[in-house]
Structures are given as C-alpha cells and as structure tokens.
Length: 329
Image 1 (tube, rainbow, N blue to C red):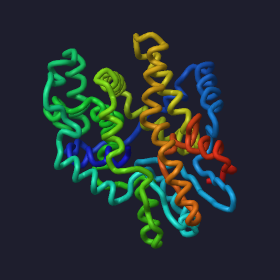
Image 2: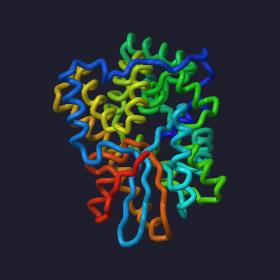
Image 3: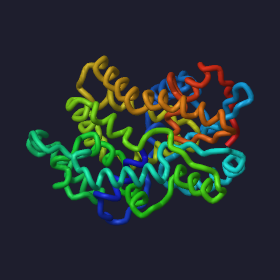
Image 4: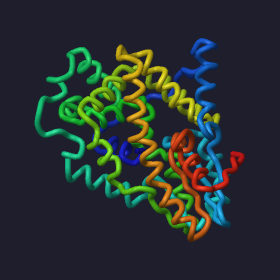
C-alpha cells in the first residue's frame, strides 16, 4: 500500500505550503475508561505488542519487522539496530521493492483507468454538495487540484486523505520511510531484495470493492480529513511505542462514533475491509516467506499492522509450527 500511495502522490500532487507535522495523541484524549477499554481490546489480539520478532522452525529462521512507512527522525536509530540483521540475512522481503514501484508508476501513467472511472456520474454529481466542498478543500490542502478528483475512484481518494499535508510533502520530496531505508541498506550490503506480492495487488483489491464499499471509505476519509494531523501523530506515537494494534482498535471506535449506521453494519464493513487490505495479503505472504526461508535466513519487513491479530503474519506462522520470539528494539 505504501508504494501505491507514494506513486499517487508523485503523479498527482503539487507541493502545498510547507507545514510541520504536529498534533495531539487521540488515544490520550479519550476518557480514562474508554482509553483503558481500547488498550485492553488491542492487547487481547494475538501478538499485539512488539515490532521485531524472530520465527524459527526446523533450523530455519525468519526475522520479522513491522515498519513505519513514512519519514520520522526516530527511523535512523531503528535502521542502525536492524543493520546487523540485514547483514546476516540471505534476502530482504518487503511489500514492494524498486522493481515493483517502477512497474506501479509505469502502469499508473500509461493506464489512467486503473484509478479513474470513465463512465457514470462524476463525484460532484453523486456526492452531497457539502461533502464535495469538504473534499475539494481537503485536496487543496494536500496540493491536489480538485478537478482531478471528479472521476477518481473513491478508494484512492481515501488513501490520499489519510495523511496530513505535512506527511504528503515529505513523501513527495523523497523523504524515506523505514521500508525505503531498509531497502537502501540491503542494497548497499549486496543483500537481494524481493517483493512479497505482485505490483498490481492493490489494483486487484480495489477492483473487487463494490461502489458502496468505496463510497463508505470516502465518506469516513472526508469526515476525518480535518483530524489528519492528530491521526498521523497518534499513528506515529503508537508505532514507536510498539503498540500498532491500538490504531486498528481506535479506527473501529471512531467509525462507531462518527457513523449513523447500525453497529452490526459498521463491524461487518470493517471486518471486510480488514480481510481485503490486511488479512488476505498476510495469507498470500506466508508461502513466499517460507520458500525464502528454505534458502537461508530471511528478514521480512512490512507494515506493522500486518504483524498482529488473528490471521496476522505472526499468528499464521505460529499455526504452521513456527516458534516465535519477540526481540528487543
């Protein structure tokens, strides 16, 4: 997902006014009882805490690291900690390597239909006027001309609105998240880099979303766009505290608080989105990880939310007989 998002920013957005990332931790602002319940729900998930793990089975070894996809001053210390693990690995597995990112950029530039609709009503025609106006302003804040959004698929717009302007500016100017830093470090060390999934995985996922699913994603993204600074700050703080599962639980809480839909409908929609965007990808990664481990020690680095929970990468490996050990970071 990080690679596709970066390509979208590079292709579609012009630099907005420079802005420093700042915000409040939304979890800290919750009432004490609500915050305690949120943390308890997160901790109830398998392997809820920890960004660095080792899995072993029959003499084979895989080191698994949950990444933060965007730039942060704290990234440098993490890369230093992981450098000996990179040097000891026979391969680095990532969500998307340089070849996949190049293929994505080429596909997006050659085939606009991958993210734009060519028939049916435009978004200005189908959205309530106040929603369209809010969407236009949120896009301007992020350096994207609103006219480009008129026929863009809502799922892609939701991704763009998920980051505050300051974080998008960092992506656009080439600031490196942990994935890119680890790829660069492995390349310098002569360690092969291989992708966990094909470059067009997310095209396939989004093509399978119904118009209703995409519209719901966009409605939530527009509603939360004004909170994106706080949301980004909360994401970063939870990640570096090695509690990324909290972000998923917070998103469930916010969806219930901000929607008039019945709770069961919200839960079923969120479960579907989690399966499409996280769990299904986790399941497809396991054979890739195990095949690589048969050739030598592996370091696999991917978004931290993929580590935890039922059908998280760690849970799937444990159910296949791998012994897990959390490592200090």
